[in-house]
Image (tube, rainbow, N blue to C red; front, side):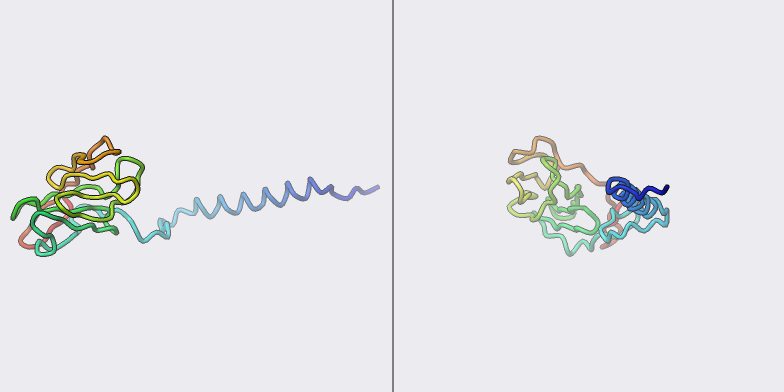
Length: 137
């Protein structure tokens, strides 16, 4: 006497196989996440000094950093992720780094909050200026 599988048995077996296949792909360990937006490491050139306006700044989305020049020859760098809800900031103007999601603004001088709802400053990134090159430190 043979029993044919029930619908529940077939669905459970199929779902388990799909889950196993998905997990094995996730843990393949080849190091390629498929993302082109990977945080840059130390020594990576972010910009040329001439690209950063005095009293302003520029966002480098691929490196996940905002570089500012509050005063001539003084360069600062901050994370480009808003501390309110994790949106990527979108502009630098009038002395602030601006988030489009809820209107948070951060001072270009130190990343501190200029306009809520964010209540934490943007984390500072370490940079070094070598000649006309701005690099992550």
